[in-house]
Image (cartoon, rainbow, N blue to C red):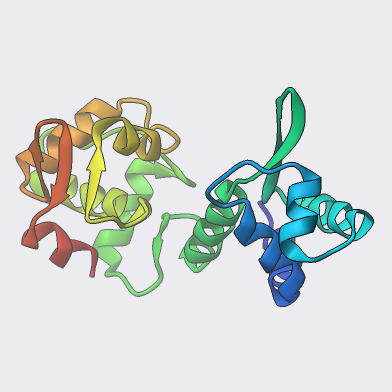
Length: 194
């Protein structure tokens, strides 16, 4: 994605969030699906204004419709998350997929194993190179205190198709611990991403 497109998307989202009515409408449908008439009543807007705000939020990818007898609306923050990730990774060097202030050696390792945002392969024999790649992968997932296995897989899959190997390596190299299908950070893992 080009920098201009990312900037444009971010600008549109910021404009939406600058409008308190958009925020009020969005906050109403964060936890429950509501019909337009319910949203209008709770937000103290007329139905036409409610629909206008819902359309703007829907065009930005922040709201989706759910049809269950009648059309209802639900907030979906996936677009906001993707934009935040794009913004966070826009400072990365597209050739190496790493932050700009890494050593030349680290940059060379990442260049060898990444093609843009995709990991080509995990280093097999060299422990130091494998750690560099694993730590870069850790920096690419959204931070949470703990992840369910399927959730972690969903973050890894877009970067590398063998997500099981990555999960296993994070545990083997003590970046994370696994307990009953839940992965949590170790101190070593937290230090690696700082």
